[in-house]
Image (cartoon, rainbow, N blue to C red; front, top):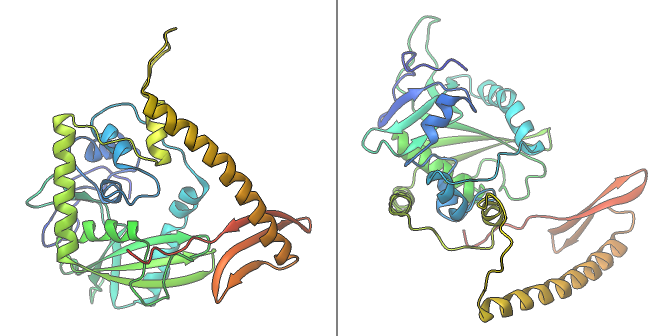
Length: 316
């Protein structure tokens, strides 16, 4: 749905207030996500668990400071394109329910807590013109090239940044269950069920409220090693002055040590990649005791790349 309106109401969620059905990237969409609020796609960054954002980069965005421009990657593009057919597949598998576009919501008691779930799930109306009952669950649609960071279908084993997103959505709308429809490699369909965790939701709220306090107070987070942090720092200057800037001796030592370690690590990585690729030969994957270590891609019969499998964070 692309109409921007608060008049077209979705059917109610227990603790959610509908802001509207907003077109992603539109002015109204940006306004609903700007300023001192935290959305479901941002909460993992607040927790330091996002693959795409860091607390540092998100803090600059919320403070209205320069941030790197959004780049439409291939996974993001195809995830967006495939959302509707994957949601349709979930609907086909669950004929007793209706999965409808959800819109953007804020919590009834905390307007700064916002979420835009992919779908709201209702009991299927008996008649064509009957109104669905209150929403009973959420549906999130995801895609993955390999699915190695996901558990078996039917479980609740999903990547931790998506778990943060889902807990935030459930807490925002006051719902207890989120179903996840996942498409792996364009053909492997899986389903997961994530239940509301009150303790996790409380921790998310507490951390988010403190994060917003630091934004309001101008207390910038420390610089960390995330790529998003470095890219954010890069866009802060708006020119160049021909002058020297003195830095500390301790920072220089860390600079020298890091580059020396990088050179050694690069050589070690090249060597171990060569050994693994040599053993794979014409095979596709390197494994160790049922753990997948790396996979080989081929073009014109020759090795094009050797890629590591993502390993699950057993501590999450």
